[in-house]
Image 1 (spheres, helix red, strand yellow):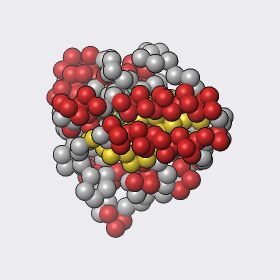
Image 2 (tube, rainbow, N blue to C red; image 1 turned 30 degrees about the horizontal axis):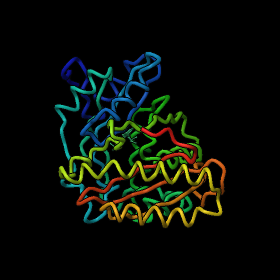
Image 3 (cartoon, rainbow, N blue to C red; image 1 turned 90 degrees about the vertical axis):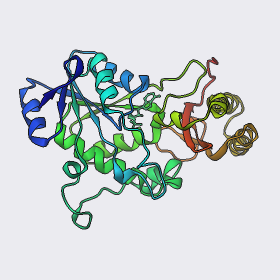
Length: 290
Ligand code: AMP
């Protein structure tokens, strides 16, 4: 066990983690991340810390949730800056396991979770096969290692948040899953570690993703379910005309991810700008524009 900047406790072995966990008199709250932390991650830490409970964040770039040809190798790794940021946000400990700690068995002997198709084969899952299986597998491992009372996830990755909620419900994992709203730049772009892949000119276009989603949410709220298919196609066209390569624009029910039907719906989109894949989502309601 080592003490990092601003006195955050750095844990990088299961033994050190077990000692730290045993020393916490009561529950702990948990914020899982892949590092390269920004204000969105730190909001999750602040949320986790708000009642004074000890907070532990994990930093682990999980190989099993990246597909072939995705950005696992070049995903930004900025541990020293991350530890400083966590410490100043009030995080007590950082769990930074090695891959062999998270996955002690060779792949052929490794257990895995299959996320249900109804939740995991649509939206991002349709374009990233196996992605949510990898997410579920790593989150389940982390939850067993840390045994938190509460874990906090961002609405920015809404499909992930929902799948994790359903997973802990289905397996009766004794943890509460909290959602934190998406933190955005002043111009509306959702903060993301992948925004650093944007060139200057792409960065100027990027906030239009949120604006298009807000417009679609307004139109969907006003015009009703009969228009959703047209709105979806129009969203794809609007993004393409702005210079994005849209992967999908979808209106889905916020609890089941079934096609939207006019109650509790959200608009979801993923689009490439250059080599950056951006995702965002908003609730179907009249949006308060920036
Ligand atoms: P990541 O490091 O990208 O895996 O994200 C770790 C956690 O931070 C996930 O629960 C994300 O949903 C959350 N997160 C990432 N970006 C944001 C953001 N802009 N606002 C709120 N939460 C975020």
